[in-house]
Length: 202
Length: 361
Ligand code: HEM
Image (tube, rainbow over all chains, first blue to last red; front, side, top):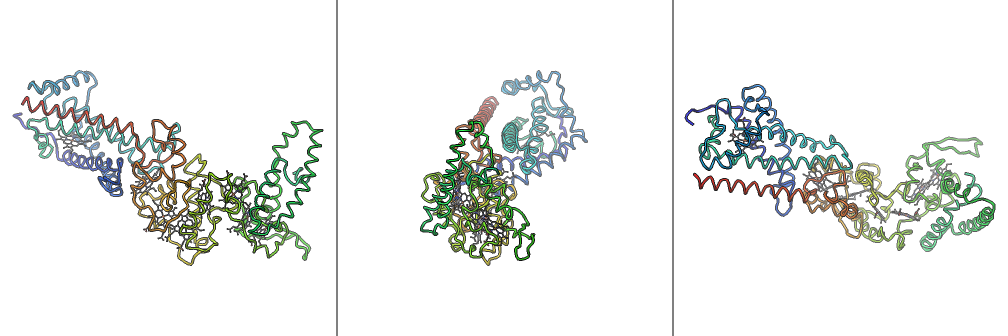
């Protein structure tokens, strides 16, 4: 990495860290609510409720910052994906992560000015940002205003399904977060990607 | 209507009615002098005559004709019509003999009952004068009738095995320890919550839990949200329940999905509906008492359903059949296991990957 690339503009960094902190708060309070247990309270129930509600509302706002930012600035181009050959490229990247990385092989998709993400990153970010995040906050708002839920879906309460979906997606986002943070340690050095997300330079 | 003029009792309600009357009279013989015992004998005589007529009638009529009879209006409806004529509407009219003309007047709104609700209530098969003096058939009602002692639930239901499943003795016992009974005199009776003209069991055979919750809460709110009914009993100011419960987030959702008694009454395994209302400082205030897997709601609100449906529910929690979702209480054991397994694999994968990375550095 001789040349330094400025890949993370200020707004991306601000959004990203707001998003990361909110997601962490939501996961911790969400787990505390779902597994609420008076003997081992992670966070006291009523505090967890307020925490989860406030962080959820802020996350929705920050999500729109992300979408609008990517629509109006050039950062959006990094997310453009071609379906043609996608599977092949994913396979290549996957093989790199499971074998190549240990044999110090060449990166199949090195970071350039026009390619911030490798195919796996791209797909997982797309899934997280344009599938799981919208679903989690739509179901979340549904739970905040239960009267907006379908009352009955094939004999099962709509509220129940919403809650079930919300919990399952929350779980997937937590999984994403773990994997995401781990993969961020696969940089030039363990911490270099984190530094990038602070100073903007890759 | 036809048979109303002919029989005192509808033939099919005939024995049931005797049973009520006899039962009441026997139980209350020491309680109030059974003023209607004389009437009862009278009725028995007339009806014995009617039985004879029916039996002879049977010889001539074919069975199908009798079956049609089944759809006829029950005798108590016909009898009660005499009372509902005045007590079923805002206005009533009567012939004023001293003025010699028909007069129309306003009815005391507290004395007006909806006949449809009465006929769907627990005591739908009753005639008004089963509980009230038969002298009420006369108008103007005798002033002394105001002094009549009213039956209490236990007068009829106490020690009766037919109603063993309701455990009336247990309820009565709890009621007497509750704030309502202990802070007030005898005038606070079961009737205060169980309106004699409308009460219908709901929780026991609920089809729709939301409606049951609304029904049960309306019982409490009848006083706790109605200053007139409240101050009939006490000089105290009526605290506004909406304000005294503003610590509950989304209070509207809570009041629609949980009953007052969940928080205010001590649960009791031998009763379906707890009746021991505790003083306010003993009320449930900790969120986790409901919002956890071991929720108190399983022993109260969802008791009947969780008993009934635990086996049938299978994949979902028993209470998934209800329309509400209680954070922390509704957990799905299968999903929990699956998520733990997935998480375990992820952590393992990350661990293995990082170890190899370090080794191959
Ligand atoms: C404390 C938790 C987190 C940490 C430490 C973290 C760290 C990082 C780092 C170092 C990068 C830059 C590397 C790269 O471009 O791949 C990054 C990018 C990114 N992260 Fe995170 N992240 C966290 C949480 C999240 C969460 C919860 C989400 C979404 C739900 C998320 C979504 C993204 C996205 C979309 C990018 C690419 C941004 C862009 O450049 O356009 N991150 N993260």
